[in-house]
Image (cartoon, rainbow, N blue to C red; front, top):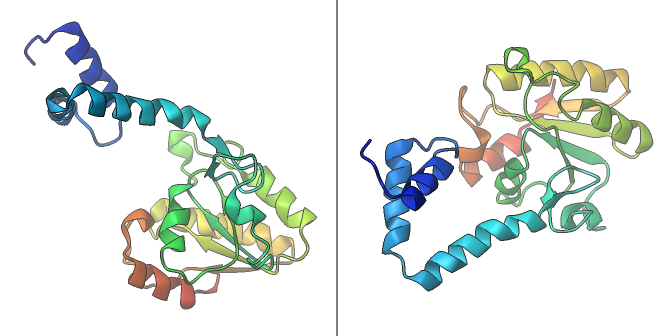
Amino acid sequence: MRKFPAPIHNAIAALSRLPGVGPKTALRYVFALLRMNKQDREIFARAVINLENITECSVCFTHSEDPVCAICKDSQRSNSVLCVVSESRDISTIEATNTYHGKYFVFGGTLNPIEGATPETLNMRELVERLKSRPEIKEVILAFSPDVHGETTIMFLSRKIKQLGRKTTKLARGLPIGADIEYADEVTLGDALLGRRET
């Protein structure tokens, strides 16, 4: 790659740290930023800096501006069903279906021991504590992507949760094998939620 002034090189290096962004894509992004006027660049920079105001919900571990997120505080949502997802972003995908009206729990990833993702590094202890302290939770939906790691996580969690006397279900096969839940359309994901079955 040709040499650029230090600010451009530093911006390329910073953007390359984003998932799926290689040096060439980062270079395109930097030049797009350079084409913006100063005011637009400042708005962009402030938006990134303001991410410091985001914290984790102390109840479900999703990203939130407050110590407890809006969904956990919503008294209109059902307390009898808990939907366990891999990442915080999966909640917005499920919410877009307007099909599910219970509460959530972010597991923090999927089991993948090769990459160091074990029950101890994810929110396993917190999930067990939540289920033990909330007897009103009757069903746990395991809403993980239907890939190898997602299915492994579903099997592991299903055994643990059934030991606590709770019903576990997983999304119906409206989602193709190998698909990422983040990219599923609302209709497919809505059908999958409505057609969930016991694991």
